Length: 200
Image (cartoon, rainbow, N blue to C red):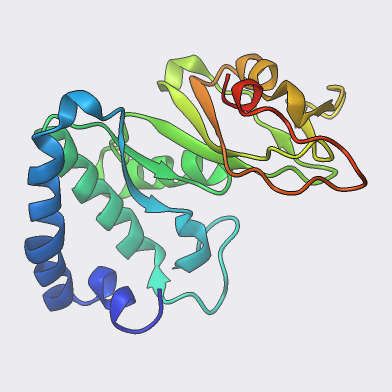
């Protein structure tokens, strides 16, 4: 989000113009189709552009954390008022939980997301966190689809499973659903995970 696009979150005049000329008309169009929409994503993987993000952010990112929290919170409220469910595609579940807690401290309320969402591209030590259903529904919005990617769930003692078992993995993590990101060429001659299995 270089240059003027970052200003849509950081500069009051640019933010007001962006909200009036882009967000408001878009929300009106979406609201007219609310029955066909499961949720509306406000921003995708905000950690990469947010300065001071607790995890996953870059030190040279242009958007301060308070500006991002306010942007998400305000537009989540606008979507709710229009009868829509708001979500954000977080890189990590830890960010989602931490930012919601920070929003409660700063504004007296959480981010207001009706659907939690995390992305999961597991490395050797990364595991799909166990989701607490008491915190509301949660979706794995992007899930690796390659057979050669190992997916772990929960504590370090949990056995790894191949992404072929994405549906079972997501259910064990108590998430509401999962969406495969793309069908990438397999490594070392392995077959691709079937989209039906990846999507559950």
